[in-house]
Image (tube, rainbow, N blue to C red; front, side):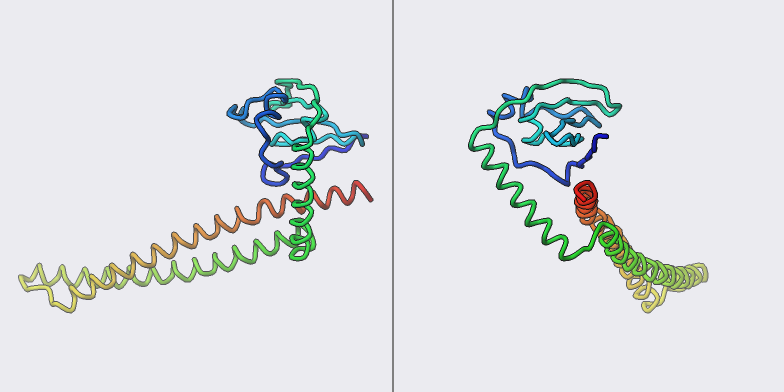
Length: 213
């Protein structure tokens, strides 16, 4: 039974390939991947790799370009890599190994990273809840001041300066609260984006350990 390893684009990206390698691989560096397409190649140990990026292993062993439904769009024969490409590949593997070690010092596994992400998101969501309550109170106060100003105008009286000042102040505070809420939403998006490749990579490491063990 063959082992299949699916690597997302942000997980195991090879170093930028030279124009010569791209040319020998049958692809041009400026060609865009069809939406949802991926590469498939098999290593000498029988492991089938499905990858969003074209790795040097795939170029060396040959690969297929598949569409999002698994249909073969292109079959490319393997090509030998020169010394420069092999050196770049070794450097990439060494860099990946260092990054993996650093990552494993922080997280025992993907579940640990998921919990860290969730804690960060939950803290931000708590801040959002607090700020939403604050915004609601500010809006009620503003409505009261606006109602007071309207009563004075209907009665033919000038709106007191203190009411005008309160309206201006509350409008500024409401704008500030809205900006905070927007910033919290962005931080949640950033947290999800930050942890996504970490979780994906830890899942790959875990699968490789199980396959090797």
